[in-house]
Length: 430
Image (cartoon, rainbow, N blue to C red; front, side):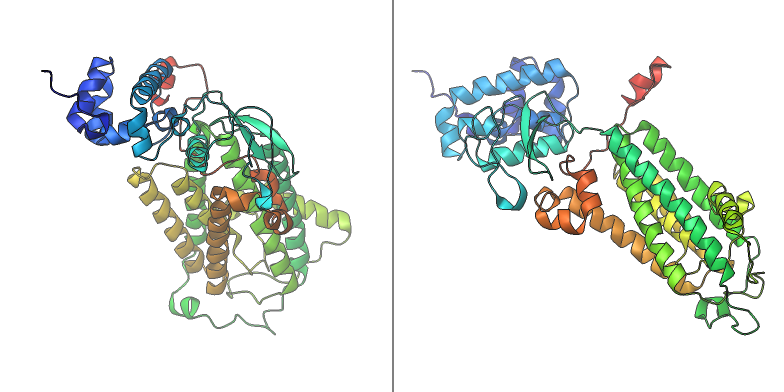
């Protein structure tokens, strides 16, 4: 009498490894069974979206499809065990399945949204397939999303639309804000308080640390290095359009806030070394020419631009900190060396700004706090889809809602060589 066949849910990792070899997927035994300890129960719950998304991240399409079909066969043969585990056959649909709205669709403000096509899936399946979509690995299935205009629009499952036209709008926005900031700096310079009447304000750090003349140039050098690192990441990142759009929208918003703060309150210069006598530029055309000079030189002393009066808060600190956070956010956590270099450049850049006595300590502190909070709030909202498309987000954060309405969850850190040559770079990077 033959022994009863062992149920799949009772399989060990070794038994799953044997099944993979029998099905012709021996090359994935190390990844699935050794690294991720896949046993029989987790094998039955495995979906195509799991295969495509992190942490597995299979990249060979043929293998993904064949393994997904093998999993479907195994699941069909073990329907009873699936039900015991609380999984139905629809809970293990591949990523190519079509999602639609025979029932309520997740949408804005908890209102039911309906889209044509397909059967409505259970919440668990919706969440799992949305997670697959968030990972950026799609296989052509259709997902129904509700956007800020209240209409349903169909997307390929797992596909992150670059929406280059939105990136162009965000780039125009940040360039306009930089130009507006330059013009405000010209106006502020004319209102700089006389140093003889209004001496530098007391500051614990500036009063305790002697001025280093070359420190401000070093701070700008730190910013340039961070900029080059980010440009390299932007070049190689698969979702470079989304990264650039987020950088432009955040940078523009912070600098727009900076325009108001430095225009409303004029602080006395932080050091006697600064030659910041009130300078009149005559007519409007003279002011515009000076603003264009500041704008074209990016407000940097390395390009020959010298400004006064723009103290509340530090623009250099904003740029250095923002670049640091983008570098660390959009590179894998295992890239410890890059993250360490980025943070060292950020902290040294802040120290050099203070050591040069170009800004008060409060300028730097406020700039760092506002930049980090805005970055974290923006990405928290962007990664939380339920709030991202709510009415409150559209009212209070219209620009955020506009730019992020089609981005579903965290942007995965995937890289590829954007050019056809050299060929070995495409093979090396992906």
